[in-house]
Picture 1 (cartoon, rainbow, N blue to C red):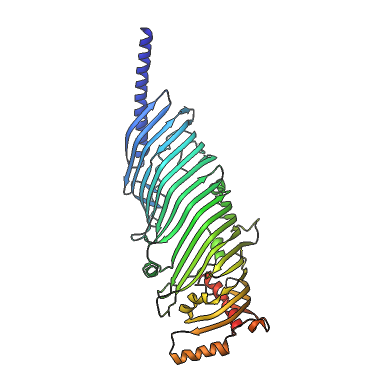
Picture 2 (spheres, rainbow, N blue to C red; picture 1 turned 180 degrees about the vertical axis):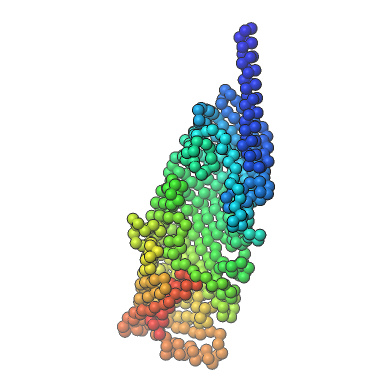
Length: 526
């Protein structure tokens, strides 16, 4: 009888204690989150003293207008929901909180912000955790599953960007968080540590340029213990047809589509990235990539200096050090519609089935080689194979770059897709046996040394009055054009040629390289 009474009394005390704890947890959650000015609702709180567990369901946080502020931004609206937050094996000691596991299920965030005007800085954001006297948190496992984010940032009244993430999952083992100032303060003065974090997401999209372009990442996984990052696909997709893009784009930019499949990174130094804001990777492999660009010169584009590739790398906002990049199945298609084109058919240059390596991809001068080295093998215009080695300077003070390579046997008529729209002429016959070249340059000029072996070159001019066209074709075939190098049937002296080209800083590096071939080729065939 006495034993039953003691048990009943103990059970009743446990129920009362759990009820008090539930109320305390509910009140703490609502006070902690509502200090920001948001509206907070909590569905249900469960507490188990024997299991040392706490479970909070259906946490909903809403805010409108200027209730929430962050440095540089003003929140227009916020709507967050957490399906369930639970902690198991909770231990609360002097100055510290410990738990065996923290689980967050189906968190979602919908956030809209606007950029504030310069000089109109908001008040410092509230610190909802400042009154919690914890100096250390240690949790064996943290698990976040099924996270979604929809974030819109208004840069002006008419321009915005949008990020949408789906299927986000995080698992961190042996997690600890220390406060340097004796209180738990948002991010600024905390040490965050976990040597085993796994992050995955199903999809991430970033819409920009007033919704005209979208960057999408599918199937990304990061493991800090192995320092590996894998991504199933990255794609940059214009949201308008290429014929309309430049005309409707606010800056009249070129239409560019990029798709990269199966990217694997090894040796990703995440600790260095977080502590030193420096990106260091041992190796990157790319299984396939497709790059397409269309320039419509019939649409006016404001004058703007275009950087060379090495300048883009040098000017990255963080130090970069990637030791090796290996790529294969690289296809590049460049279309250009000249301003003077009679038809709407653009000139086209294709580089298909490309593969190669990039070594010493860095903008860190000290302790690295002088050059970024790019080895590249591809099929030019779907015909001849070309192999090249490119050396780009690492240092911004170094103005020297060079490319050397060799083009194998090629049917010269395959170049007509580029020549006919751009030069109003076509090649009627001709075979390249080999083309060896060495191109050196600075940011302003290039110098080409070239030897091209070819046979039976014939050129025809198009779209002129019949008599004028026949005269030009006669002059080209019989008087101006050297149809063979060396002479017919391999007789005669093998001609080599050199040529210089001055860069137009408002044109791309691709334009610079492509047109650097022209003077030497003309000196070979004329």
